[in-house]
Length: 334
Ligand code: ASP
Image (tube, rainbow, N blue to C red; front, top):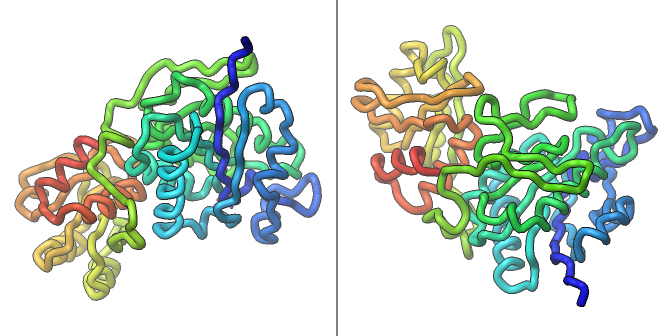
């Protein structure tokens, strides 16, 4: 009896992986023109996936990922939870623009309630360009989602044959196909030309079914803004966040979490007004750490989460609590 193939649901959201350029040498203008293939048209380009899995597909949205934010994260996570709960599906693939792919992937990593593989992919060169990575990345994503070893590892990303944890990955280069990096933490494995999916390590932080977040029925998320430290930065941006009465703020500091004096004072005022403030770093690797001063001023530290992901976690954390210590603990666990 022949073994049945894994059933994979592919959800299209747009991005370069679906982009239609004006000619074969266009690597930038397609995004401004906004024309896109449907996910069915993308799949028709790679009939080889029929050997790997039985595919169902749907177009959730069709936009550049610069236009994807909290509303789309909620829709996508709710849709995936629904598919994995009710459908006869072994894994889910999401195609997405690379600009905010890391934020969406981390949001899903914290809100999808399943141990089945969920894999997010994109492309740096649209399918209409010479040397496109769109087709291979989509095949790889389906291969990873169809692989039992990918289960239980949280949401994964794949581009350039490299599998990353959604928590650690970020877009590190504006144009190169090897843009997705986890700095010194490294990637988790490969999807390679011999058709094998190989894992060498697994994430240690809590994810998916093991988080305390439940976004079922949620229609909006708390508003969290990010401000950035630079030589001589003062209270201007933080005052705007305070005036706006945002629900939370990420302060992106130097190194392990320091700021120009005026900016620090403004951040401390925000905490006194009841705005939870998380300290992240503008360095792209390493931790921000709890010090006597951060403790005294009531700040939370982001550990090694980059600012956009520290924001995602605070938005979700604030749906469950506003307690400083509980929020701080989340940054050490998720
Ligand atoms: N503009 C694209 C986006 O949707 C970029 C990409 O997909 O690489 O993020």
